[in-house]
Amino acid sequence: MSRLIIGVGFRDRATAQSIEDAIATALRGAAGAEVVAIATAADKIRHPALLTAAGQRALPIVAIDPLRLRDADPQVTTRSPISLAQRGVGSVCEAAALAAAGRDAQLVVSRVVSADQHATAAAARLQEPSQ
Image 1: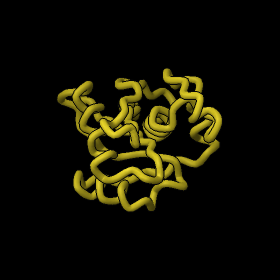
Image 2: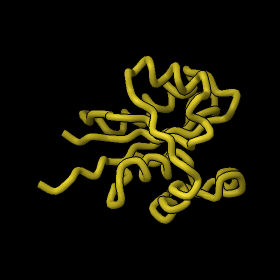
Image 3: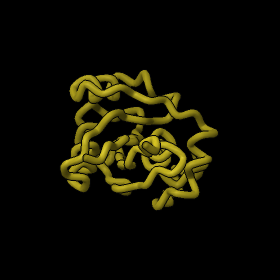
C-alpha cells in the first residue's frame, strides 16, 4: 500500500471544512493509499482550521520552511501566479507534499481546490527507505 503525504495550502479565512474538502478531493485521486501526515508552509501550522482538520483525521502536521518549499518547486506541476508572487512556488500544497515526502518523492495528485476556493491539497508518495 502506498503511503502518502497530503500537502495543503489555504487562505487565512479558510475553515476546517475548506481544508477537509480539499483533502477529501485529493484522496479521491489516490484511492487505497494510507495518509501518514499533512504538510504545509511553516507559518500556517498553528491555524485553527488546519489544527481541526488534522485532528479530525488524527494526522500529524509537518511544517515546511520557505527554503524547502522552493527546493521542491522544480517538481511542482501547477503554476499559480498568486502562489508564485507570495511564496515563490507554483503551488504551496504540491511543494509541501513533495518536500515532506522526501528527495525522490513523486506527486500522485496535483493541486485540487476546495469547493469554497479557500484551500488546496495535493498528494505525494512517501519516499520509503531502500530495504
